[in-house]
Image (cartoon, rainbow, N blue to C red; front, side, top):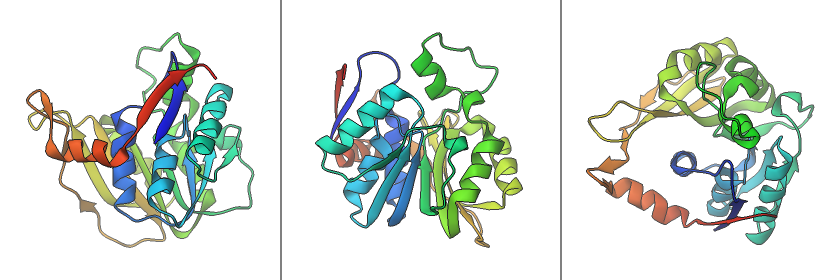
Length: 231
């Protein structure tokens, strides 16, 4: 998959590819909304691999709106893009899946002076409580919310999900190395669910200086080719 990205500023990273692989494990179908689409990497990969997906995205930044539109066209994937802030979406449409690699750097993190990075990374622009409340309003009954976040904020995630009656049913932690603490958590939550939580085996990124076999397979499955340019 060809993915055009800005020459400078925010570019997708391994978090997006790990999330795509996690989403794929649930064989999504129906209306899928990618929140904070960026260049479109997560939603486009999911739609490419799951032909029963009807893909939608929402992106606030004008520069990224151009890239995701271009990437959908280049890769021949039908895409409906809402060019606005997710929290201000006023839609009658309900979704079967909402997916997101949202900005999750907390308030105490040092802020970037680059405007694109500032909006793409810091959760001041998409606070957990407001984010999850909006998600819960846009999901169909028994629908799915799959996202990744900073693992150190898991307590806040659980509280915010509970407040809007979304229940975690699958969780997987990502560790840089097996002896290192988790840096990322991937979560599958549902509304109207009574399921117990399934804790998946951790995803380990590196074995020594090399990618683990599982991570190598994720990159192989994604088949992405990044092209940095100015549209």
